[in-house]
Image (cartoon, rainbow, N blue to C red; front, side, top):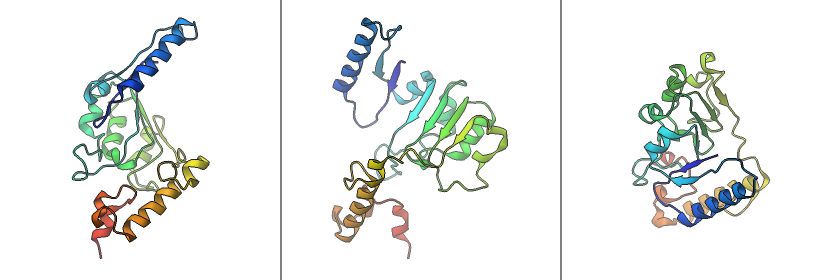
Length: 196
């Protein structure tokens, strides 16, 4: 398949070049019938052109980054997608505005969606994503994309949730990052720290 890539913070052109070389070799050796390509594109261009949009971003709320990802997929960005496109999210739930996604599916702005994460977990019974009218085009999975042994159990915070949990606790207890909870990458639900 052809691939469009978007990253607001970093573009690894050496990696993209290596993938392209691999694709070219597969075509030259007859493994792939079609000559495929991979390239970087702007976010809106990627949304307009892609048949499948696979989301792999951290959750960054406004104020946490120059490029927040909270509700990155909202009414405006969902309307940019092709009517025949599919959206797949296994990054973080709040990256998608679920009410906007449900509307996009009901009104056929896009063809379908598959979600493994949600704004609120477990997904509430009254979520608009559970609307029977969109059930044939909205696949709801029980957060199992992270079910691999390494992902669940590795003590390395760059690989496993166990390591991230422990590192988040250490960061809070040792007041790492100058004690600024908002800068601690492995502390989730940062808003809870502002409540008494």
